[in-house]
Image 1: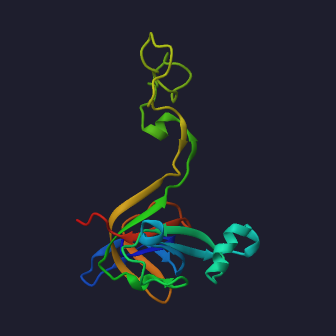
Image 2: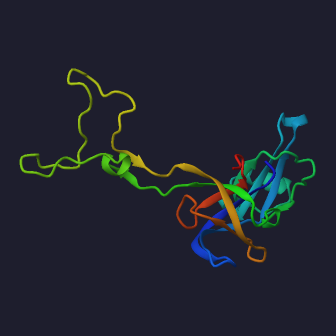
Image 3: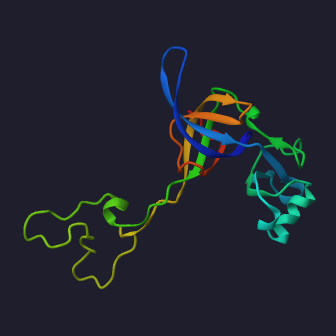
Length: 210
């Protein structure tokens, strides 16, 4: 990994290019993030950096959480994520990561958490068909259908049943960086990004470039 940053999804809009093309984009408030700690191959067996984002009052952290920020001489932060960079020797604890590491035209992977839908039935969760609506089909039309074999005494594993739907980590690959606003720390990427407005996302350089 060469480039990585934590941000918040602001929303979606559209950008008109010079040739008149209208491109739908997602606005991401990316950083600035601070390097809270780093791990090296010699000491930890792998190379990575612990990055913090979004300030938070000290009273909302316990003593161990607060200690790592005091060790790095940094203000407390709400979100911590670890990124495996190719080289962290050049990074210094306390350094700032911002949108300057990205350029227009870069391919990035954006990871976020999808919107939670709560407890849902099989029609919404698994896109199953409902019971026919004709007379004599029963009072319930959105219930679960057959549970399997007529002689079975149990429900088989992997059966599509009602349950919690949404709130899953999803990564969208190979999104193009359309525009960067250095003053506002904003990245505009082409297409949609998982999660509602205000949700946390991570932007890294594309792993599987097309």
